[in-house]
Length: 268
Ligand SMILES: Nc1ncnc2c1ncn2[C@@H]1O[C@H](COP(=O)(O)OP(=O)(O)OP(=O)(O)O)[C@@H](O)[C@H]1O
Ligand SMILES: Cc1ncc(COP(=O)(O)O)c(N)n1
Image 1 (cartoon, rainbow, N blue to C red):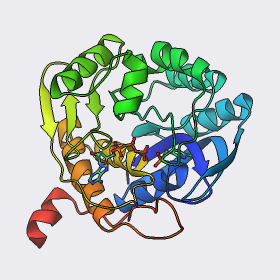
Image 2 (image 1 turned 90 degrees about the horizontal axis):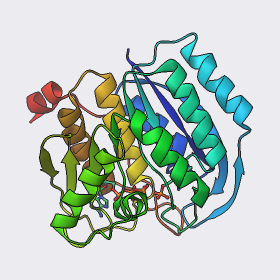
Image 3 (image 1 turned 90 degrees about the vertical axis):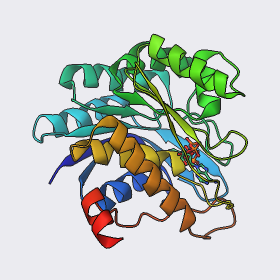
């Protein structure tokens, strides 16, 4: 069994963060491990409070895992502060995992800031260069690049700018854009549109976490980066289509068992 690690924040409501990541790993048949960077008191409506975890125990969590267990792929989510960004970057530099998928989480669906401003500069300087793939949504890509992203042309420009900042590849997500949620994948050489159909639901809490964890799982399972993204897009689309109306706000997506491509074609 392949093994994946998420370095992210805990969501007490279970829809996003560490909880969404581990559910997604399990649904892909991948053994999930976690390094918790922050604890959020959160539900479908709000983030009530956030407690950052001490950087010393973040370093220890990462070392405890890497010094004992082979890690096939790492996903990085909510980091919260500059100090935590730097701590995670230092540890990942020391252990240099083969695959690191960076979801630059900044604001929750309920509107709470999950990354402080000082952390953005550190994330750009220290973490982007370590990422196999960075998966920003439109507002996150705007903060990282300083560009305004409205048109298709802007999507291309933002991807180029993010690779210039050091990321190996980019998946710029279109969930926040007008129209269908088409994502643009730039592998450093070629662009590929990963197309989707907009599903009319408010239950999209944890979509970004789930997508990046599905990509991480697929990479851990040996798929190419492009195949991992394409399969993950099918997965998140089904997960949103089957999402749950629990709580009064943005409900969570459904982490159903993901069939492999072979199983999928046999089951059709
Ligand atoms: N209503 C929707 N219907 C179908 N697909 C969607 C919808 N909303 C988002 N997606 C897709 O879900 C994936 C996650 O994108 P999104 O832009 O929501 O990320 P995010 O804002 O980072 O998520 P989160 O807020 O959970 O961190 C993308 O592939 C996006 O295209
Ligand atoms: C711990 C944690 N990590 C990530 C998110 C982003 O997810 P969303 O934008 O869907 O609220 C979150 N709300 N909480």
